[in-house]
Length: 474
Ligand SMILES: Cc1cc2nc3c(=O)[nH]c(=O)nc-3n(C[C@H](O)[C@H](O)[C@H](O)COP(=O)(O)OP(=O)(O)OC[C@H]3O[C@@H](n4cnc5c(N)ncnc54)[C@H](O)[C@@H]3O)c2cc1C
Image 1 (cartoon, rainbow, N blue to C red):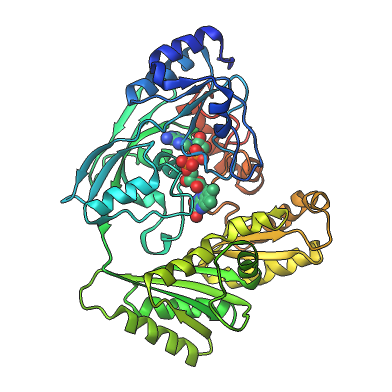
Image 2: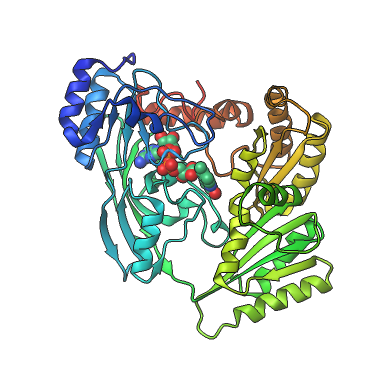
Protein backbone atom coordinates (compact mmCIF):
# COMPACT_ATOMS: atom_id res chain seq x y z
CA UNK A 1 0.00 0.00 0.00
CA UNK A 2 1.23 3.52 -0.80
CA UNK A 3 1.90 5.65 2.26
CA UNK A 4 -0.36 8.61 2.88
CA UNK A 5 -0.31 11.75 5.01
CA UNK A 6 -2.07 12.43 8.28
CA UNK A 7 -5.54 13.84 7.50
CA UNK A 8 -7.91 15.77 9.75
CA UNK A 9 -10.26 12.79 9.85
CA UNK A 10 -7.50 10.44 11.04
CA UNK A 11 -6.25 13.05 13.53
CA UNK A 12 -9.75 13.21 15.05
CA UNK A 13 -9.83 9.41 15.41
CA UNK A 14 -6.35 9.33 17.00
CA UNK A 15 -7.25 12.11 19.47
CA UNK A 16 -10.30 10.15 20.53
CA UNK A 17 -8.14 7.07 21.19
CA UNK A 18 -5.69 8.84 23.51
CA UNK A 19 -8.19 11.21 25.18
CA UNK A 20 -7.79 14.90 26.00
CA UNK A 21 -4.60 14.40 28.06
CA UNK A 22 -2.96 12.39 25.32
CA UNK A 23 -2.40 14.82 22.47
CA UNK A 24 -1.30 18.32 21.58
CA UNK A 25 -1.16 20.44 18.44
CA UNK A 26 0.29 23.46 20.26
CA UNK A 27 3.50 24.45 18.39
CA UNK A 28 5.16 25.39 21.71
CA UNK A 29 4.48 21.95 23.15
CA UNK A 30 5.67 20.27 19.96
CA UNK A 31 8.84 22.36 19.55
CA UNK A 32 11.17 20.44 21.96
CA UNK A 33 10.07 17.19 20.29
CA UNK A 34 11.21 18.43 16.88
CA UNK A 35 14.88 19.23 17.37
CA UNK A 36 17.76 16.97 18.28
CA UNK A 37 20.28 17.71 21.07
CA UNK A 38 23.01 18.80 18.65
CA UNK A 39 20.76 20.99 16.53
CA UNK A 40 21.66 18.96 13.43
CA UNK A 41 18.13 17.91 12.49
CA UNK A 42 14.68 19.42 12.69
CA UNK A 43 11.46 17.45 12.50
CA UNK A 44 8.01 18.54 11.36
CA UNK A 45 4.71 17.47 12.92
CA UNK A 46 1.28 18.94 13.38
CA UNK A 47 0.15 16.48 16.07
CA UNK A 48 1.87 14.94 19.08
CA UNK A 49 0.29 11.83 20.56
CA UNK A 50 1.07 10.79 24.13
CA UNK A 51 -0.74 7.48 24.74
CA UNK A 52 -0.93 6.21 28.32
CA UNK A 53 -1.35 2.46 27.76
CA UNK A 54 -0.22 -0.31 25.44
CA UNK A 55 -3.80 -0.66 24.21
CA UNK A 56 -3.79 3.00 23.16
CA UNK A 57 -0.45 2.62 21.33
CA UNK A 58 -1.81 -0.47 19.57
CA UNK A 59 -5.02 1.28 18.48
CA UNK A 60 -3.06 4.32 17.21
CA UNK A 61 -0.79 2.09 15.13
CA UNK A 62 -3.72 0.01 13.88
CA UNK A 63 -5.58 3.10 12.66
CA UNK A 64 -2.43 4.45 10.97
CA UNK A 65 -1.77 1.06 9.39
CA UNK A 66 -5.24 0.92 7.86
CA UNK A 67 -4.64 4.14 5.89
CA UNK A 68 -0.85 3.85 5.48
CA UNK A 69 0.22 6.80 7.64
CA UNK A 70 3.71 6.67 9.19
CA UNK A 71 4.28 6.56 12.96
CA UNK A 72 7.50 7.80 14.55
CA UNK A 73 8.06 6.66 18.15
CA UNK A 74 9.96 9.00 20.43
CA UNK A 75 11.39 8.56 23.93
CA UNK A 76 13.38 11.30 25.65
CA UNK A 77 14.55 12.70 22.29
CA UNK A 78 18.21 12.58 23.35
CA UNK A 79 19.23 10.42 20.38
CA UNK A 80 22.17 11.72 18.37
CA UNK A 81 21.30 10.44 14.89
CA UNK A 82 17.98 12.15 14.14
CA UNK A 83 16.16 8.82 14.52
CA UNK A 84 13.17 10.03 16.54
CA UNK A 85 12.21 13.06 14.45
CA UNK A 86 9.16 12.92 12.15
CA UNK A 87 8.65 14.40 8.68
CA UNK A 88 5.55 16.33 7.60
CA UNK A 89 2.42 14.18 7.47
CA UNK A 90 3.77 11.57 9.94
CA UNK A 91 2.38 10.89 13.40
CA UNK A 92 4.73 11.65 16.30
CA UNK A 93 4.14 9.20 19.14
CA UNK A 94 5.82 10.01 22.45
CA UNK A 95 6.01 7.23 25.04
CA UNK A 96 6.55 9.60 27.99
CA UNK A 97 3.21 8.94 29.71
CA UNK A 98 3.84 5.20 29.78
CA UNK A 99 6.05 5.43 32.84
CA UNK A 100 4.73 2.87 35.30
CA UNK A 101 6.64 0.16 37.11
CA UNK A 102 4.67 -2.99 36.43
CA UNK A 103 6.57 -5.46 38.57
CA UNK A 104 9.57 -5.72 40.85
CA UNK A 105 10.69 -9.31 41.49
CA UNK A 106 13.61 -9.04 43.90
CA UNK A 107 14.16 -12.79 44.17
CA UNK A 108 14.31 -13.00 40.38
CA UNK A 109 16.50 -9.86 40.11
CA UNK A 110 14.09 -8.33 37.60
CA UNK A 111 12.18 -5.09 37.15
CA UNK A 112 9.34 -4.78 34.63
CA UNK A 113 8.80 -1.21 33.46
CA UNK A 114 6.97 0.66 30.75
CA UNK A 115 8.95 2.14 27.89
CA UNK A 116 8.49 5.78 28.91
CA UNK A 117 10.26 5.41 32.28
CA UNK A 118 13.21 7.80 32.44
CA UNK A 119 16.48 5.89 32.83
CA UNK A 120 17.41 7.71 36.08
CA UNK A 121 14.03 6.68 37.57
CA UNK A 122 14.67 3.05 36.62
CA UNK A 123 18.06 3.26 38.38
CA UNK A 124 16.39 4.85 41.44
CA UNK A 125 13.69 2.16 41.60
CA UNK A 126 16.38 -0.53 41.57
CA UNK A 127 18.33 1.33 44.25
CA UNK A 128 15.26 1.61 46.52
CA UNK A 129 15.05 -2.19 46.33
CA UNK A 130 18.72 -2.43 47.33
CA UNK A 131 19.71 -3.50 43.82
CA UNK A 132 21.49 -2.04 40.79
CA UNK A 133 20.35 -1.28 37.25
CA UNK A 134 23.73 -0.61 35.67
CA UNK A 135 22.95 1.15 32.39
CA UNK A 136 24.35 4.67 32.81
CA UNK A 137 24.92 7.56 30.38
CA UNK A 138 25.16 11.31 30.56
CA UNK A 139 21.61 11.72 29.20
CA UNK A 140 20.10 9.46 31.92
CA UNK A 141 18.03 12.30 33.42
CA UNK A 142 15.92 12.54 30.25
CA UNK A 143 16.38 9.49 28.01
CA UNK A 144 13.79 6.72 28.42
CA UNK A 145 14.28 3.00 28.76
CA UNK A 146 12.32 2.39 25.53
CA UNK A 147 14.72 4.69 23.67
CA UNK A 148 17.70 3.05 25.35
CA UNK A 149 16.57 -0.38 24.18
CA UNK A 150 15.55 0.85 20.72
CA UNK A 151 19.08 2.27 20.26
CA UNK A 152 20.89 -0.43 22.29
CA UNK A 153 22.57 2.34 24.29
CA UNK A 154 26.06 1.83 25.69
CA UNK A 155 27.37 4.33 28.22
CA UNK A 156 30.01 4.04 30.88
CA UNK A 157 29.44 0.59 32.45
CA UNK A 158 29.53 -1.60 29.35
CA UNK A 159 32.90 -3.12 30.20
CA UNK A 160 31.45 -4.76 33.32
CA UNK A 161 27.74 -5.16 32.50
CA UNK A 162 27.30 -4.94 28.72
CA UNK A 163 25.09 -2.76 26.48
CA UNK A 164 21.37 -2.10 26.97
CA UNK A 165 20.75 -5.27 24.94
CA UNK A 166 22.31 -7.35 27.71
CA UNK A 167 20.03 -5.87 30.38
CA UNK A 168 16.79 -7.25 28.92
CA UNK A 169 14.98 -10.55 29.46
CA UNK A 170 11.65 -9.73 27.85
CA UNK A 171 9.79 -7.15 25.80
CA UNK A 172 6.27 -6.07 24.97
CA UNK A 173 6.07 -4.64 21.45
CA UNK A 174 3.33 -3.11 19.31
CA UNK A 175 3.80 -4.37 15.75
CA UNK A 176 3.21 -2.49 12.50
CA UNK A 177 -0.39 -3.73 12.13
CA UNK A 178 -1.29 -2.76 15.69
CA UNK A 179 -1.09 -6.26 17.16
CA UNK A 180 0.75 -6.66 20.46
CA UNK A 181 3.55 -9.17 21.00
CA UNK A 182 3.64 -10.03 24.70
CA UNK A 183 7.18 -11.25 25.21
CA UNK A 184 7.47 -10.02 28.81
CA UNK A 185 9.20 -13.17 30.01
CA UNK A 186 11.24 -13.10 33.18
CA UNK A 187 13.27 -16.15 32.22
CA UNK A 188 17.02 -16.51 32.11
CA UNK A 189 16.67 -19.70 30.11
CA UNK A 190 14.19 -19.99 27.26
CA UNK A 191 15.35 -21.74 24.10
CA UNK A 192 12.02 -21.95 22.32
CA UNK A 193 12.69 -20.74 18.82
CA UNK A 194 13.92 -17.53 17.25
CA UNK A 195 15.12 -14.84 19.68
CA UNK A 196 12.42 -12.35 18.62
CA UNK A 197 13.37 -9.93 21.38
CA UNK A 198 16.70 -9.31 19.65
CA UNK A 199 14.97 -7.99 16.53
CA UNK A 200 13.62 -4.95 18.34
CA UNK A 201 16.79 -4.02 20.23
CA UNK A 202 18.76 -1.48 18.18
CA UNK A 203 16.01 -1.40 15.52
CA UNK A 204 15.30 2.26 16.40
CA UNK A 205 11.54 1.99 16.07
CA UNK A 206 11.64 0.64 12.52
CA UNK A 207 10.33 -2.86 13.33
CA UNK A 208 8.01 -2.29 16.28
CA UNK A 209 7.23 0.05 19.17
CA UNK A 210 8.55 -1.15 22.52
CA UNK A 211 5.93 -0.52 25.22
CA UNK A 212 7.42 -2.41 28.19
CA UNK A 213 10.49 -4.44 29.17
CA UNK A 214 11.70 -6.89 31.77
CA UNK A 215 15.10 -5.63 32.94
CA UNK A 216 17.86 -7.49 34.74
CA UNK A 217 18.98 -6.21 38.13
CA UNK A 218 22.26 -6.87 39.92
CA UNK A 219 23.58 -6.73 43.49
CA UNK A 220 24.75 -3.27 44.45
CA UNK A 221 28.49 -2.82 44.86
CA UNK A 222 29.51 -2.00 48.44
CA UNK A 223 32.66 -0.17 47.52
CA UNK A 224 33.81 1.89 44.52
CA UNK A 225 37.19 3.41 43.77
CA UNK A 226 37.83 6.01 41.09
CA UNK A 227 41.25 7.07 39.82
CA UNK A 228 42.28 9.69 37.28
CA UNK A 229 45.47 8.44 35.69
CA UNK A 230 48.00 10.01 33.32
CA UNK A 231 49.35 7.23 31.09
CA UNK A 232 52.41 7.28 28.89
CA UNK A 233 50.45 6.43 25.71
CA UNK A 234 47.27 4.58 24.65
CA UNK A 235 49.12 1.26 24.27
CA UNK A 236 50.29 1.60 27.89
CA UNK A 237 46.66 2.30 28.81
CA UNK A 238 45.68 -1.06 27.32
CA UNK A 239 48.37 -2.83 29.34
CA UNK A 240 47.11 -1.03 32.45
CA UNK A 241 43.56 -2.17 31.70
CA UNK A 242 44.67 -5.78 31.53
CA UNK A 243 46.66 -5.38 34.74
CA UNK A 244 43.67 -3.84 36.53
CA UNK A 245 41.27 -6.57 35.35
CA UNK A 246 43.63 -9.37 36.37
CA UNK A 247 44.72 -7.99 39.74
CA UNK A 248 41.20 -7.03 40.82
CA UNK A 249 39.43 -10.24 39.89
CA UNK A 250 37.75 -8.37 37.02
CA UNK A 251 36.30 -5.63 39.23
CA UNK A 252 36.90 -2.89 36.60
CA UNK A 253 33.57 -1.23 35.78
CA UNK A 254 34.82 1.67 33.68
CA UNK A 255 37.95 2.43 31.70
CA UNK A 256 37.54 5.75 29.92
CA UNK A 257 40.11 7.56 27.78
CA UNK A 258 40.61 11.29 27.17
CA UNK A 259 43.38 13.23 25.50
CA UNK A 260 44.87 16.50 26.70
CA UNK A 261 42.80 18.62 24.31
CA UNK A 262 39.57 17.13 25.72
CA UNK A 263 40.67 18.04 29.25
CA UNK A 264 41.73 21.54 28.18
CA UNK A 265 38.35 22.24 26.55
CA UNK A 266 36.57 21.18 29.77
CA UNK A 267 38.85 23.30 31.98
CA UNK A 268 38.33 26.31 29.70
CA UNK A 269 34.54 26.16 29.42
CA UNK A 270 32.97 24.23 32.30
CA UNK A 271 32.85 26.11 35.62
CA UNK A 272 34.29 24.55 38.78
CA UNK A 273 36.49 22.02 37.02
CA UNK A 274 40.20 21.70 37.74
CA UNK A 275 43.12 19.70 36.39
CA UNK A 276 43.72 16.70 38.70
CA UNK A 277 47.49 17.15 38.14
CA UNK A 278 49.98 20.00 38.46
CA UNK A 279 51.68 19.08 35.17
CA UNK A 280 49.97 18.66 31.79
CA UNK A 281 50.04 15.15 30.28
CA UNK A 282 49.07 13.92 26.82
CA UNK A 283 46.86 10.92 27.63
CA UNK A 284 44.56 10.14 30.55
CA UNK A 285 42.28 7.35 31.70
CA UNK A 286 39.46 7.38 34.22
CA UNK A 287 39.42 4.05 36.00
CA UNK A 288 36.58 2.84 38.22
CA UNK A 289 36.48 -0.41 40.15
CA UNK A 290 33.58 -1.75 42.19
CA UNK A 291 33.16 -4.69 44.51
CA UNK A 292 30.26 -6.20 46.37
CA UNK A 293 32.42 -8.50 48.49
CA UNK A 294 32.56 -7.55 52.17
CA UNK A 295 36.14 -7.12 53.34
CA UNK A 296 37.57 -6.56 49.86
CA UNK A 297 40.34 -4.01 50.20
CA UNK A 298 39.48 -2.38 46.89
CA UNK A 299 41.51 0.73 47.64
CA UNK A 300 44.55 -1.42 48.37
CA UNK A 301 43.97 -3.25 45.08
CA UNK A 302 43.78 -0.02 43.05
CA UNK A 303 46.96 1.21 44.77
CA UNK A 304 48.66 -2.04 43.81
CA UNK A 305 47.49 -1.71 40.18
CA UNK A 306 48.82 1.85 40.00
CA UNK A 307 52.08 0.96 41.74
CA UNK A 308 52.76 -1.89 39.33
CA UNK A 309 51.70 0.39 36.48
CA UNK A 310 54.27 3.00 37.58
CA UNK A 311 57.01 0.39 37.73
CA UNK A 312 56.09 -0.90 34.26
CA UNK A 313 56.19 2.63 32.82
CA UNK A 314 52.47 2.66 32.01
CA UNK A 315 51.45 5.22 34.61
CA UNK A 316 53.05 8.67 34.77
CA UNK A 317 50.87 10.16 37.50
CA UNK A 318 47.69 9.13 39.29
CA UNK A 319 45.06 10.72 41.54
CA UNK A 320 42.96 8.25 43.54
CA UNK A 321 39.71 9.92 44.64
CA UNK A 322 39.79 10.50 48.39
CA UNK A 323 36.03 11.10 48.68
CA UNK A 324 32.78 10.69 46.77
CA UNK A 325 32.94 14.41 45.96
CA UNK A 326 36.35 14.03 44.37
CA UNK A 327 35.22 10.97 42.42
CA UNK A 328 32.27 13.06 41.17
CA UNK A 329 34.71 15.82 40.13
CA UNK A 330 36.71 13.32 38.06
CA UNK A 331 33.52 12.02 36.45
CA UNK A 332 32.36 15.55 35.74
CA UNK A 333 35.47 16.15 33.66
CA UNK A 334 34.79 13.07 31.57
CA UNK A 335 31.07 13.67 31.14
CA UNK A 336 31.46 17.37 30.29
CA UNK A 337 33.61 16.78 27.21
CA UNK A 338 30.69 16.76 24.68
CA UNK A 339 29.32 20.01 26.14
CA UNK A 340 32.79 21.59 26.24
CA UNK A 341 33.32 20.60 22.62
CA UNK A 342 30.01 22.19 21.66
CA UNK A 343 31.03 25.44 23.38
CA UNK A 344 34.34 25.68 21.56
CA UNK A 345 33.41 25.82 17.90
CA UNK A 346 32.22 23.61 15.09
CA UNK A 347 32.80 19.87 15.39
CA UNK A 348 32.90 16.79 13.19
CA UNK A 349 32.12 13.74 15.31
CA UNK A 350 32.66 9.99 14.96
CA UNK A 351 31.25 7.38 17.35
CA UNK A 352 33.28 4.37 16.26
CA UNK A 353 34.52 1.06 17.61
CA UNK A 354 37.41 -1.28 16.91
CA UNK A 355 38.57 -4.37 18.78
CA UNK A 356 39.88 -3.17 22.16
CA UNK A 357 43.34 -4.47 21.22
CA UNK A 358 43.49 -2.01 18.28
CA UNK A 359 42.33 1.18 20.01
CA UNK A 360 45.87 2.55 20.28
CA UNK A 361 46.31 2.12 16.51
CA UNK A 362 42.99 3.84 15.90
CA UNK A 363 43.96 6.83 18.06
CA UNK A 364 47.37 7.17 16.39
CA UNK A 365 46.23 6.63 12.80
CA UNK A 366 42.99 8.59 13.25
CA UNK A 367 44.94 11.55 14.62
CA UNK A 368 47.50 11.49 11.80
CA UNK A 369 44.77 11.20 9.19
CA UNK A 370 42.73 14.09 10.58
CA UNK A 371 45.80 16.33 10.79
CA UNK A 372 46.67 15.51 7.20
CA UNK A 373 43.14 16.28 5.98
CA UNK A 374 42.64 19.42 8.08
CA UNK A 375 45.98 20.94 9.13
CA UNK A 376 45.75 22.48 12.60
CA UNK A 377 42.56 20.58 13.51
CA UNK A 378 41.93 20.05 17.23
CA UNK A 379 41.69 16.36 18.09
CA UNK A 380 39.04 15.91 20.81
CA UNK A 381 39.59 12.19 21.30
CA UNK A 382 37.84 10.48 24.22
CA UNK A 383 35.58 7.53 24.92
CA UNK A 384 35.06 4.10 26.32
CA UNK A 385 38.53 2.64 25.72
CA UNK A 386 37.67 -0.50 27.68
CA UNK A 387 34.95 -1.28 25.10
CA UNK A 388 36.99 -0.27 22.05
CA UNK A 389 34.54 2.65 21.52
CA UNK A 390 36.30 5.94 20.83
CA UNK A 391 34.70 9.27 19.96
CA UNK A 392 37.15 10.46 17.31
CA UNK A 393 35.92 14.04 17.37
CA UNK A 394 37.46 17.02 15.62
CA UNK A 395 37.10 20.71 16.35
CA UNK A 396 37.67 23.49 13.85
CA UNK A 397 41.29 24.70 13.71
CA UNK A 398 41.92 28.10 15.31
CA UNK A 399 41.61 30.70 12.56
CA UNK A 400 39.48 28.56 10.23
CA UNK A 401 35.85 29.60 9.62
CA UNK A 402 33.24 27.14 10.91
CA UNK A 403 31.57 26.91 7.47
CA UNK A 404 34.86 26.09 5.74
CA UNK A 405 35.58 23.40 8.34
CA UNK A 406 32.09 21.86 8.18
CA UNK A 407 32.27 21.82 4.37
CA UNK A 408 34.92 19.12 4.82
CA UNK A 409 32.58 16.86 6.82
CA UNK A 410 31.83 14.31 4.12
CA UNK A 411 35.43 13.97 3.00
CA UNK A 412 36.64 13.61 6.61
CA UNK A 413 33.85 11.18 7.50
CA UNK A 414 34.63 8.88 4.61
CA UNK A 415 38.35 8.89 5.34
CA UNK A 416 37.89 8.25 9.06
CA UNK A 417 35.24 5.59 8.60
CA UNK A 418 37.27 3.86 5.85
CA UNK A 419 40.12 3.69 8.38
CA UNK A 420 37.85 2.31 11.10
CA UNK A 421 36.25 -0.28 8.82
CA UNK A 422 39.71 -1.33 7.62
CA UNK A 423 40.49 -2.14 11.25
CA UNK A 424 37.51 -4.54 11.58
CA UNK A 425 35.56 -1.76 13.25
CA UNK A 426 32.06 -0.28 13.37
CA UNK A 427 30.93 3.06 11.94
CA UNK A 428 28.43 3.45 14.81
CA UNK A 429 29.45 2.03 18.15
CA UNK A 430 26.62 3.14 20.42
CA UNK A 431 24.56 5.98 18.95
CA UNK A 432 22.81 3.94 16.27
CA UNK A 433 22.02 4.74 12.65
CA UNK A 434 18.87 6.88 12.51
CA UNK A 435 19.00 9.29 9.59
CA UNK A 436 22.62 10.24 10.12
CA UNK A 437 24.29 6.96 9.21
CA UNK A 438 21.86 5.32 6.80
CA UNK A 439 24.19 5.91 3.87
CA UNK A 440 26.99 4.24 5.83
CA UNK A 441 24.85 1.11 6.18
CA UNK A 442 24.70 0.93 2.38
CA UNK A 443 28.37 1.82 2.00
CA UNK A 444 29.99 -0.42 4.60
CA UNK A 445 27.73 -3.41 5.16
CA UNK A 446 27.90 -6.30 2.71
CA UNK A 447 25.08 -6.63 0.12
CA UNK A 448 24.03 -9.82 1.90
CA UNK A 449 23.68 -8.00 5.22
CA UNK A 450 21.79 -5.03 3.71
CA UNK A 451 19.49 -7.47 1.92
CA UNK A 452 18.79 -9.31 5.19
CA UNK A 453 17.93 -6.00 6.86
CA UNK A 454 15.54 -5.10 4.02
CA UNK A 455 13.88 -8.53 4.18
CA UNK A 456 13.33 -8.21 7.92
CA UNK A 457 11.85 -4.73 7.47
CA UNK A 458 9.61 -6.03 4.68
CA UNK A 459 8.46 -9.00 6.79
CA UNK A 460 7.63 -7.00 9.91
CA UNK A 461 6.49 -3.73 8.36
CA UNK A 462 5.45 -4.45 4.75
CA UNK A 463 3.84 -1.01 4.26
CA UNK A 464 6.84 0.81 5.71
CA UNK A 465 4.84 2.85 8.24
CA UNK A 466 7.20 2.46 11.21
CA UNK A 467 9.78 5.25 11.39
CA UNK A 468 10.37 5.46 7.63
CA UNK A 469 13.63 6.85 6.28
CA UNK A 470 15.66 5.61 9.25
CA UNK A 471 18.22 2.80 9.61
CA UNK A 472 17.45 0.76 6.45
CA UNK A 473 18.83 2.17 3.17
CA UNK A 474 16.27 2.75 0.40
C1 LIG B 1 24.51 14.34 26.62
C2 LIG B 1 24.26 13.03 25.92
C3 LIG B 1 25.05 11.94 26.25
C4 LIG B 1 24.84 10.72 25.62
N1 LIG B 1 25.63 9.66 25.97
C5 LIG B 1 25.41 8.47 25.40
C6 LIG B 1 26.21 7.34 25.76
O1 LIG B 1 27.14 7.43 26.55
N2 LIG B 1 25.93 6.16 25.18
C7 LIG B 1 24.91 6.02 24.28
O2 LIG B 1 24.70 4.91 23.80
N3 LIG B 1 24.16 7.06 23.90
C8 LIG B 1 24.37 8.28 24.44
N4 LIG B 1 23.60 9.34 24.05
C9 LIG B 1 22.56 9.17 23.04
C10 LIG B 1 21.13 8.91 23.61
O3 LIG B 1 21.03 9.35 24.92
C11 LIG B 1 20.80 7.44 23.55
O4 LIG B 1 20.75 7.04 22.20
C12 LIG B 1 19.46 7.07 24.21
O5 LIG B 1 19.41 5.66 24.32
C13 LIG B 1 18.23 7.56 23.47
O6 LIG B 1 17.09 7.41 24.31
P1 LIG B 1 15.83 8.38 24.12
O7 LIG B 1 14.75 7.91 25.04
O8 LIG B 1 16.21 9.78 24.23
O9 LIG B 1 15.41 8.01 22.62
P2 LIG B 1 14.98 8.99 21.43
O10 LIG B 1 16.05 9.95 21.12
O11 LIG B 1 13.64 9.56 21.72
O12 LIG B 1 14.83 7.94 20.24
C14 LIG B 1 15.96 7.27 19.74
C15 LIG B 1 15.50 6.24 18.68
O13 LIG B 1 14.74 5.21 19.30
C16 LIG B 1 13.40 5.16 18.79
N5 LIG B 1 12.54 4.93 19.95
C17 LIG B 1 12.41 5.68 21.07
N6 LIG B 1 11.57 5.09 21.92
C18 LIG B 1 11.15 3.96 21.33
C19 LIG B 1 10.26 2.91 21.71
N7 LIG B 1 9.63 2.92 22.88
N8 LIG B 1 10.07 1.90 20.84
C20 LIG B 1 10.70 1.85 19.65
N9 LIG B 1 11.54 2.81 19.24
C21 LIG B 1 11.75 3.84 20.07
C22 LIG B 1 13.19 6.51 18.11
O14 LIG B 1 12.26 6.42 17.07
C23 LIG B 1 14.59 6.83 17.61
O15 LIG B 1 14.83 6.15 16.41
C24 LIG B 1 23.81 10.59 24.65
C25 LIG B 1 23.01 11.70 24.33
C26 LIG B 1 23.23 12.91 24.95
C27 LIG B 1 22.36 14.08 24.59
